[in-house]
Amino acid sequence: MAMATKDVQTLVDDIYHLGHEQHSMVEGVRKLVKAVVSPLSEEVKYGGILFTSDVQFCGVFAYKKHVSVEFNKGAQVADEFGHLEGGGKGRRHVKLYSVNDIESKHLAHYIPLALEAARADS
Image (cartoon, rainbow, N blue to C red; front, side, top):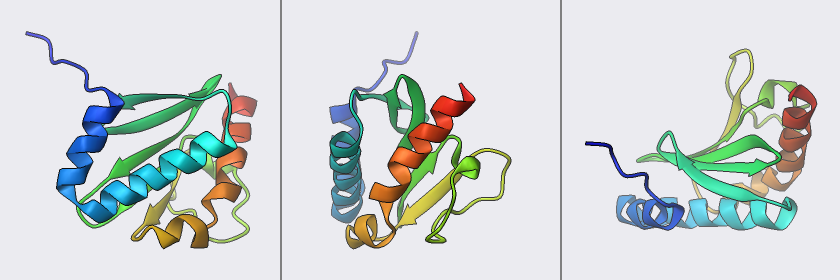
């Protein structure tokens, strides 16, 4: 029996039950990505929401104590603010602990750079 794929709204509803702060952060990230990138599509994969605009470039994942914004080709993004974490070959992430971190950790700056890096690598 195949597992049904969750739609984005179902996952967002599940995150609300995980925690109201995580829900607010995920919704804030979604709103920001939609404002910065067009065209944009979202899909549920790997337990989070993945964002695609020609290429998959970013995802948002909720955890018990934080929300992680993952950049597929984040290692190729210049980190002038010092918020990108991770030491792997490709991916980098920004951990959010409050809604204010969306702005204070400069996500609006990183998102278009992550898209540009993903497009350059495709």
